[in-house]
Length: 306
Image (tube, rainbow, N blue to C red; front, side, top):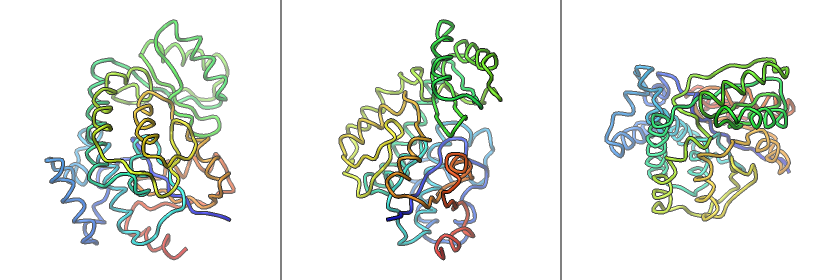
């Protein structure tokens, strides 16, 4: 049997103006956006629709903005529902709402807190990230180990074949970048980020997130959610709670997650949220997959029709 999976983007996919067309066309969208502004006691909608970009780019704003945009699009998709879901880093929270494990309200509060905690962790311990292209996972793990004498550095995102992001202290990442160039990487590029996400430098964010996850209502997922930490499906509420905490400092195993969704029957993937980052990664992971995306109101008709 062949299934449809929905995948949800994470930080980096945001843009000023995201969701504005949905608000203009849909009372459902207007209701969700108003609810979000009320719950967070900030005008998240103004930041999304008007920016400025440097404010939207702040992690504490980026994460709830992307989450809200994805949830608005889910509402516009009506009764359509996937068989499997996954989300890249922050996107995992969107996936859990669609899977019935988290409520919209609790998901929104969690991603706002997560963004605040991660932003603060980045301010407390200065770090950076870099994209490496053209090296396999074992080569990246090896060069990170060799560079660790200069500082903390580890693989943060296994995104697609030959595209891996590393994260850690400035010294550790720079040492690993130099080794990557020596060892034949096709591209080595430092990223503009506010912290060393998915690395031990996010450890100071764990206590606050752990407390919030212990207090929030998490239910068993109604459909399989492919965890960033394990790249395997999870539905048990207790396991979901544990994995969301581990996700802060663990690598995002996205390439494996996509492969495992295909293993379990997914052939059609719909990216629900801003941009086309995950569609681009999916093409590189497996060119046989059927890919589409929903970012704007105009995209809804095409997805619904097919």
